[in-house]
Every structure is written in structure tokens, then in C-alpha cells.
Image (cartoon, rainbow, N blue to C red; front, side, top):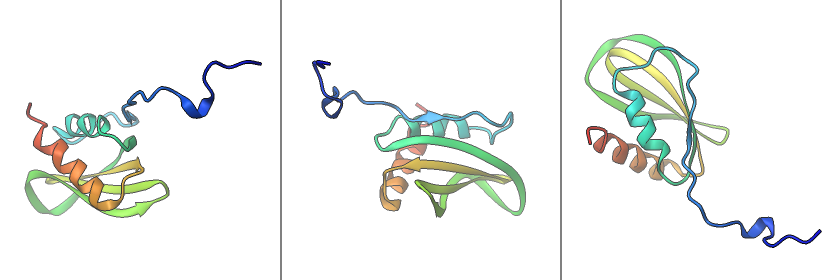
Length: 110
């Protein structure tokens, strides 16, 4: 078997992360932010999770890193009195992920 390119020398193509659609409802504007986040290097899979209600009110969309999970982090998205869990599988460390989230939120309107 002669291979022209060994597996370790695959072309360096940038591969976007994957956004998993396993719920029919999401916070308004969240999907656009998550799509932008998936385009950043080091983000593999983004999965929106459970939606819930809270007492406090957050007038603007906020994404806050909550806890580390195996292979990434759980992020809490808040807007109004609604929260939604988001699971992000990534090779980024927490500070790098926070920066990536900030970039995605800054560019969501463009």
C-alpha cells in the first residue's frame, strides 16, 4: 500500500466547529453567536442545552463560562429572565474561550 500522503501530513485545511441542533427553541440571537463561535479555531462542537427561567433580569445577552466538562466547558447564556446551557467542546483554555466568546458576541450584528 503506497500512500502519497501519510495521515500525519494531511493538508492544513481549517475545519469549522459543528453546531448541534437538538432543541427546537433557543434564546433569541443565541444561534447567531454560536455559529460565529464555531468558526473560530479550536472550537469543535457547540451544543445548546436546557432552557430555564431565573428570578434575576439580564437586559442584554450574556455568555458566562460556568464549569469545565470533559473536553471543554459548560457556558450559561442569559437574556431577560431566561437561561440556556451551552456545552462547548474545545481545545482552548478558559481564558482563550472567553476571548473567543467576546469576539463572537462583538461580531453578531455584522
